[in-house]
Structure formats: structure tokens, C-alpha cells
Length: 534
Ligand code: SF4
Image: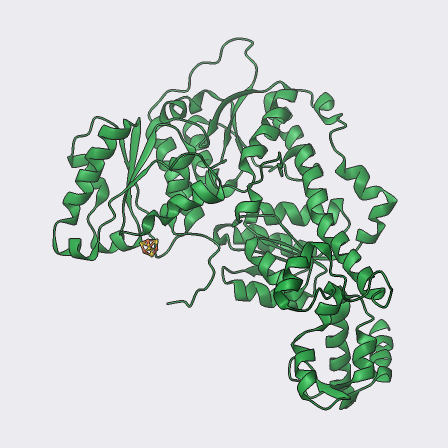
């Protein structure tokens, strides 16, 4: 048992559902208890699809358990095939159904349906969503491309590739595909099949015809691509084109496989990140400490962009993709940090606090954590909420993706700077404490603080709440350590920009502990500063 409040990935059947929902002509019959239909909302609400995902749930209830649940499943299969007339059906069980051991694969096969049946064995208690998606995609690819001959290539035909990995509910997959297609087309490479997104089982039968496979999301397509390589000798393009450097590498890798000169494709003015990052306005970005966490693909790409393209300092790197732990560990070593390989958000939070970053790049969970810790944050990876399925064009891949990344990472830092200035000028007639940062006005109202400024609220921590109950001139430090702050010292501390204030507080308290100072005064604060500046 593991006490879990937040989970980065759903159960593996949600991964299977994502594959079914990505494709055309595939229907998923899922043996699952009543209530599992919640998964529909991921697609209709978060991804804002206009249609229900192609899934039939058996939705058995407690009273069904005394009866024949296998019969329920068979009935659901028959009905689904009759009603939806798919080219293929996936059959499997959710967590609870796995326990009743009805064997969906065997039952569906015994029905003698006139559509191909792809049975899924997804161990819900050991594996998670991305693994479920990868396994389902692999089963489908194997089922439909397997046993075929690689077609002869026509004389003089251009090089062609498959794009593998984009799915429903994938972070920015919809727009990444557009960007990657653009890159490939600019090189003169034909796109044979894109899968699973928008592909049908019939399309999968054409996979062997391509010269090579582009794997955009290894978490989803690595297994299938490895099988295709073994079966049809198709090389794999492994560079994921997120970031300018990676996009350039991607172009070169594809060009080499396709026997094409990449010069023209590389000579582009579509990349604005490189210049923006060099422009003088970006000077203040240099050396900013950034903590990165997400799925392995996005975390690795983000770390590279952060260090090589924006001049940040990676102060933490982690993933919940256990299958890619080795890659993340190697990258973390490269950046000189301890890797965080965990799917427990509390571990991640602890690592963030420890690393005292100035920017967090993570998932929806880290957005919440960073908000609580008052650190600027941008989202770089699933799991994400509805706002990260935007109406506008917002890829992460290719040159336009790099432009989007520049804006979305730098924006929260700018907001942070703005808040800092508001804090500094809070005695000013215009920027006083009653003027809240506009983007947090609602929070101010909810706090009932009469529109108090954000920087001011940053100071209104548990620390201050405690202060109110204690002696007027000295107060306990927030973590309950023995050191005590005088009101003047505390006031002085507030002059420090809020995003480094936590570190200054911790350093001063450490210094006080080490030098046996019980009451922290302004002098202690400056002594500590001098001590750590040495
Ligand atoms: S079967 Fe699994 S996914 Fe469905 S409600 Fe139970 S635990 Fe959740």
C-alpha cells in the first residue's frame, strides 16, 4: 500500500484508452466497474473533444458480482461491434476487473466476432498509464503490421518515414505534429503514416513501407519502433526536436538517414528563441536556478534548453517515468545534480524546497507546489489540466515550439520581477500594499485582505501569523527552529526579493545556529550575508 494523494499517471487502461481515442476505427471494450466512465471526461473536458472516446465499459456493479460477469463482458463486445462497426476492437480489464479474472481476451476470441480482436494484458498494480499506452500501441502495430513483407521501394521515390508517438491527451501533441511535419516536408521527406493519432488499423498495415521511423514520444512509441526496427530494419530517429539545438540535430539526423542535404532546412528565420535569449533584455536570465520535473522526454529536453539555450542553471532534474530513469540519471549527473526519480509529489516538493530554485518547470502538480512556495513556474509536461490544451497554436517541438517555450518560461519570471518591484515600491503612492498584482486579484479578494499586494502577502506567511501571537519584538522562525528574529531583522529580510528570501532566511538561521546566536538581529542578517558571500 502507498498513501497517495496525487498521481502523475493514471492506471494502464487509461493509456490504452488514449490509444483507442487517438485512432480511427478502433473500439475498446473495457471490463470495468460502474464509475470508471470518469475517464471519458479526460477527453471531453480536458482535451475538449467533441465526441466521446470509443470505449464501451461493462460498468458492473456490486450486485453483478454474484452473477456471471463474463457474460456481461461478452454482451458488451457483441453490442460494441454491432453498434460501432470498428475495424478492430481492443479488449481488456481495469484494476477492479483484473481481480475478478474474467479473461477478456479469451472471452472475446471465443465470440467469433468478424473483426480482429487485440487482447490487452495490462497489470494495473505494477504499471501505469504511459506503459499501458506503449503496450497497447505495440500490440496494435504488431497485430496489423506483423507478418507482412516490406514493400519494394519505387525507383527514384523520395525517402519516407512514419511519425510515431502522438496521442490523444498528449501534452501539445496536436501542434507538435504540425511542426514536425513542416520540418520533414522542408527536407523533402515523405510522411508515410502518423500513428497512433488519427491512424486507423488499416494505416498500421502500411507502416513497413517507410524507410525509417521518427519517434516523437519515446514513452509511447519506443517499444513499437524497436519492434519495427527488428522486423523491417527501419532505423529510428531518436532526437526529440524540442528546443533549437535538438531541432537542428533532428534535421541533421533525418537528413542523413534520407540522404538529403540539410543546409536549406537549417537556414531558417523561424527560430526567434536564439536571438531573444541573446538580446540584452535576457541578461537577467543568466544563471537563474531552475528545477525541472516531468515525463522523461520533456524533462530531458527542458534541461538542455535551460542550460544551453537560455543560460539557466539546472538545480534539480527528475521524472516519474521509471522506464527512463537511466536517461534522467545520466543527464542529472551531467548537470551536477541528484536525480529525482519518484512518482510521489511530496518527494518532488521536498527536492524543490531543497534546491531553492528561482523557476520551476514541471507538471500541473509542480505548478501547485510552486504556487504554494511562491516560486515562478511553467508547465512543460503531462499531467496537465485544461489550460494546457489551448485553443491557439502552441507546439513544443520545432522552431515554433522553441519560440513558444521561450515565451512561456520567461513570462512567469517577468511576473516575478514585477511582483518584486511592486514589493520594493510598496510605500509608493501608486504601488502601495493595497494594490494587488492584477493577475492575482481574485486570490486577494478570497483572502479577504482588502486587495493587499502580492509581495506583501508573501510576507504574510505562517511566520507572521505566529508573530501575531508572540512577543511584539521577537518571533519564532517558520520551521520552529530555536533561532528568533527581531521585528527589525524580519523587516530587513522583507527587503530581499521574495524569490531569494527563503534562501536568505534559511542561510541566516543556519549561520545563527552555527554561531550560537539565539536572537537574530539586523547584524546577524548581515553577518550571515557576509559569511556566505565569502
Ligand atoms: S477500477 Fe481502477 S480506475 Fe477504476 S475506479 Fe477502481 S481503482 Fe479506479
